[in-house]
Length: 147
Image (cartoon, rainbow, N blue to C red):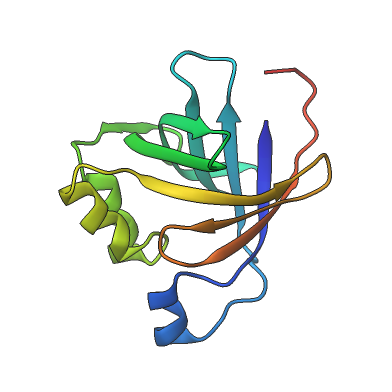
């Protein structure tokens, strides 16, 4: 399903630079397509309903560890420019923009993926801690069509 980011502390590195972030004012949506094989993830930043940038790729979820690992291999800019990313490029872009963690760059060099450790998720709210140490909270976006 689709989940809108409503709160983040930012990564540990971002917290040191700018302080803790309590509210995420820009529309950021993560989509998890668990019925696809392989499972897919998309992370988008929107201006209203217009997608400014959307990263997409594959994901794996370990239910026992409550760990979601993912790798973005595509970016769509302004809903027009479709760019294929090489291994590690999404991590580098995320770290440079502040949207991702420097630890994802390190993980990529070790042949590991970016990840979230899920704390809780139900029909009203989801919480997870990212690989960079930041805490995030999402709310579900109602969908007219099922996955």
